Amino acid sequence: MPKKQFLLVIFSVVCFLAVGSAQARAEGFIDIYGGGAVTQDADANVSITFSSLGVVRREIDTKRADFRPALSETVSGTSLDIGVDLRAGIAWQFQKHLALFGEYRYTNFSADLENTDVLYGLAGSKDTIQTRLATNHFLIGISYRF
Image (cartoon, rainbow, N blue to C red; front, top):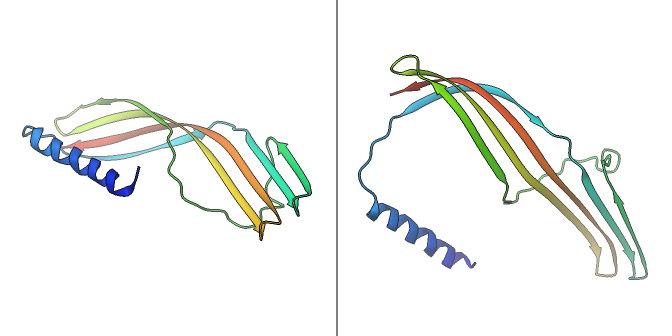
């Protein structure tokens, strides 16, 4: 979807919500919490394709690969991916303004990386890594509600 059409859709939705909504009031809150996260083991599918003048071509597929010797530098990037984020929790309000709470979160998304190194279209390599990450998050905390 082109950028102008996307912005028009967003603007239309915001206008619809602003006109069609009734006045509402919600309570404010401040949370202090901590917890841990456990990421499940994941397989990484690696594919490396080499070509030289379009004649020699070799592909390698492997799982649970060790990237440390060949990948000595930090790799970073940005992407927008669709994943799953499920949450469930409970709060016990033991005073008018204070509550204890616990929360469980489950996140699941795939991370696909691709690096292409081509020399004038005649020779080069293409490296791809595909993996799916699933993480369980556990949180506990205290909430001040006003």
